[in-house]
Image (cartoon, rainbow, N blue to C red; front, top):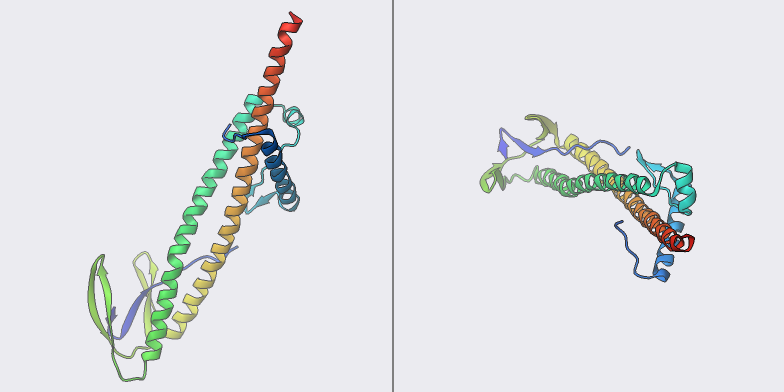
Length: 225
């Protein structure tokens, strides 16, 4: 896109990073619960929350958990199911942000390549012939002479002119911030998925404990009568 010696690029700016589980057998159940218990204990000892996302506590003893929380089994299951849905909602939002960053990071890299091409072409005496997108699926050919500046979109229909050196510095900074933000998002997603697993296992343990208690009471009733 060339007009009056200027090349218009899109600026990408990012802030700096600051009963659903069933087990097939008792042996598999004990092994899985043991693995999740060790994961929960190691993670909870290190961090109880991550960037405002609360950590889930693994329930070792269901009876003690219900006594301390003052809840019956049904109330505890309802609470845990609600917490599970909250974790999954956070996971969906984080996944959307991750997809957005993964799509826009290549755009920033493409802008950097374009500016580098313009700088390399400068002084050769040859015009740069390129195609640019006018609208979706419609392209036009442009002839770009030597240029010392480019225009970056700031958003909200605002465009600002930068020298090529300033544009490279700005785009490089935005690229670094975007990559750092993506790395933080990956860590957040892993943390949330761990909490989802811990909560699912806790729901299964509370549900199984409640079923066992009901069966024990039913088995004791005929003997008492």
